[in-house]
Image (spheres, rainbow, N blue to C red):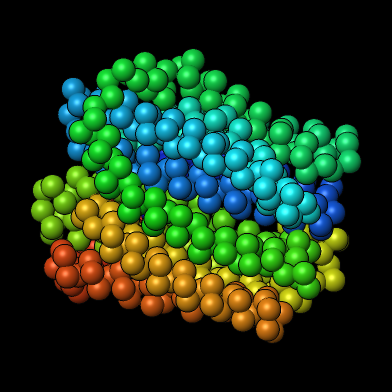
Length: 450
């Protein structure tokens, strides 16, 4: 069945998107293994705090400048695409400069009052990272909007390779210093951006074609998508941020908690890939009919869930093996705790496709404000549970249980509004299910005949 599923995905935007994310995830995983083994729990926890905040801020920029551009590019004709790319690029530059001004103005104040804050490296180095990855993040937006996932594979391959080699070579030869690692990470992103600029993949040659009306349109859509992207990222990172504020738990607890959540990153490889390909397809399908939109939504949701089932099954039966592989001997004393966390994580993994596709669908039907409401509800619920888990009970188990708890009402809210806006119902789900069975049967028949 799995082989048949991949036959369907072959030579499609889905497979190219999946391949790009898989390659980047592979580099990230090797980098993770190196860091876990060559860094102390304290230093590794500090890196997780920095990288979590950097990811959150990147989501802010992508939400504001990228999501609306992808949606517009997916339905635009060739003559309008360059104006959309230029307008998106302008907004990306403006956002990067604004972040740099705010952060460098705040740095001396935070340094004076909180000289040992874990967030000082974020204020000091993130503006440099934002500038370094501006070009290649813009290139990915252009490639996704024009459904050119082959190009995304190359960009992610280069970026992941530079990061892995730079950090790996450094840690093998030198003692871990968090600032050195951050600088290496910035340089790796800069090299990737230089590649995309020299290859004219980021659209910088169209920079003079910025259109004020398009800029306003992207900004108008982007204010909701930014809030949704940041909120969505906070859902994943709020655990880390709240743990970082606890003197009793701190960076060591962050490091322990992060290892079982690597399973979520593995699950998100196909999920990120297919949602990236799905967004322009959902937008295009809606321009044809709501029936086609609902059919496409059902097919994507069912296929992705099917792909995650064997992953959850394997991880659920052999958690100790994979946790020991990820964490090494340094985390052997916390293995029983990590196993219990893993079981909650796997429930969360199986809920992810239903949740994520509802968000993509709401963006496609031009209802980003509904997705924002959904995410804010989930975020508030999760933060409240996290605060009790960390500062009252000092329990990582309660924290991960909250992660599962906040996902379910969010799913219900998202799908309720989709049904209201598109008429999505059981017949649409059955249509997608029948289409999926046809694809699997056709794939199995070809497999047998090979």
